[in-house]
Image (cartoon, rainbow, N blue to C red; front, top):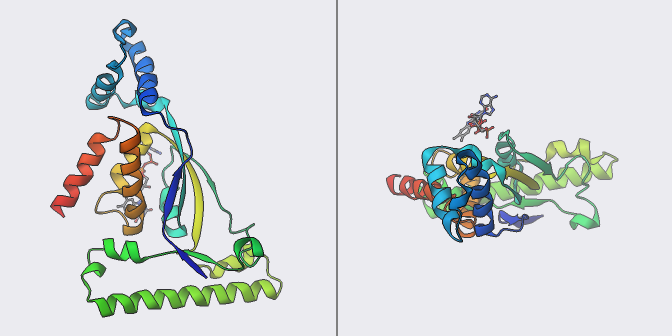
Length: 228
Ligand SMILES: Cc1cc2nc3c(=O)[nH]c(=O)nc-3n(C[C@H](O)[C@H](O)[C@H](O)COP(=O)(O)OP(=O)(O)OC[C@H]3O[C@@H](n4cnc5c(N)ncnc54)[C@H](O)[C@@H]3O)c2cc1C
């Protein structure tokens, strides 16, 4: 078996300023104020639109991301309804084949354990014992999966023994408004630690690449970390 860290790839080519210019062009239709467009007016315009709650304007830009995380986390991702998804299928992928290294890939739970308020406070010995138990469970699942395939089971039958830590890839397309909503919910301390782990990294990348749109959400995240 293989253990990997969660990761992401932003598939949509991002030019932050161009995104804001699109938002401005769309939004100014409402006020017929296109004459106010200058080289850098899009920054202030986007800021005002978001601050006023006129968020339908930012629905006009979609971003697609490929997330690599575990299947438990992916169950939470697909609860967001204003989005499109394409997910690696455990019905069709046969992990016992060479293509997959004849092994199951799992997403490391260490990052999630460190973000869990209770588990992170445990002494090092207990922390390691919990982790080792998880490793053992993953090895067991892999053993039974491969054996079921050897006996003639199809992947869609054998998958029943795979656990929530099984790695999955999922392409997610959301407009900027829904990404804001996603980040607000999924970076908050109440979110599942492994969901937070990837959502926080992704929010930081979005904030760096797209000016203005995620600044307030990132600020909320920082404040929530200070309070907890
Ligand atoms: C900390 C946390 C714990 C959770 N625990 C559980 C749990 O124990 N069990 C469980 O089943 N789920 C749980 N969830 C999932 C949660 O209930 C939502 O399904 C998920 O967060 C998707 O968010 P959403 O419904 O706000 O919005 P999205 O589906 O992302 O939609 C965005 C927004 O569109 C609007 N919208 C979308 N669809 C409708 C609609 N049909 N009617 C009216 N307005 C709509 C709403 O304003 C919504 O906020 C949890 C989520 C979090 C963050």
